[in-house]
Amino acid sequence: MSKWYSRGGADNDVILYSKVRLARNLSDTPFQSKMSPEIRKSTVKKLYACVKNSPLAGEFEMIDLASKSAVQAAAYAERQMISPEFAREKGAFLTTEDESVTVMLCEEDHIRITAFHSGLEVKKAYDEANKTDDVFLKSLPIAFDRRLGFLTASPINLGTGLKISVGLHLPAIKENDSLGRLASLVGKLGLTLRPLYGESGAFYQLTNHVTLGITEKEAVDNITAVALQIAAQERNLRATMKNSERWEDRAYRSFGTLKMARRLDYGEFISLASDLRLGAALGYFDCDINAVTAMIHTMADGNVLSSHDGAEEPEAVAALRAAAVRDMMNA
Image 1: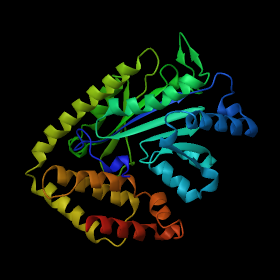
Image 2: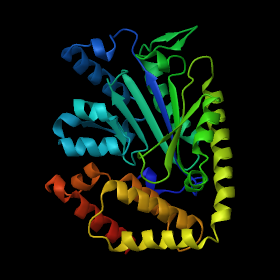
Image 3: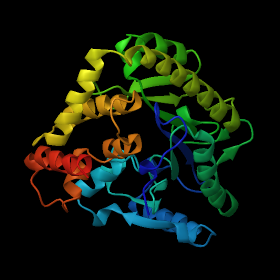
């Protein structure tokens, strides 16, 4: 089965993915930070049994990170299936075969459901997360207050327990030096805009940070509307770049480097892939944007090393990444 990140989605020229996360806790169990190892183990079993006895049983498998190497655990975190902290703690989580829905068991909260969809499909991602959430709500005592909403380990998530993120590719807005102004504007709307890969490339994540005093539908509608406006602004600025000889040359240079390089550090790869994705969107060359997005999602160090069963030394990762990228680019 193909993974969610290899498929197309709405507005995928600008928008990489939609991500929805729901935080839930059991009302009769201490928060994870106060759990003994025995309580944590029994809680994980209880949560797993809840899913295994539900109509979703055939959709999920449980992965116990205690049986995985550090490299394999890091690879899951790089694909945003779990948090980096959870990868280091070697906990257990549930995942669907296409990795579109994962459930961390006893992370900061007892239940952390994450659902992904390619492109701007926040509602579809929310519906998938909500379907899994219903399994727990119907079978277990979930901590909920009529006035405050869902009770969470961190007050930041109190209320809906809903965190929504949208991955964005904004090279034109970055080139126009408009990112600071845009971040300030969305901040006034209860959202944050942060780089996805540090200073490399032009990839950003738009996230809501208001969970109290707002409904889940309002949160979904709000971030979707803002993401659409950002996408429109990015496209308008890209139109002014299309006939730029400088940008065309840069895109082709990046295209050639990715096809021929023998070593690629991750930061360099992200910058080149950002140029490649823009060049494809501007029509400079025939390149599948979805394939580029999938490549971006799977070329961090842990994923590269785990694809070789972690047998290679970390020093070899730049050469291994370059080889994997060449195979994809020349296929």
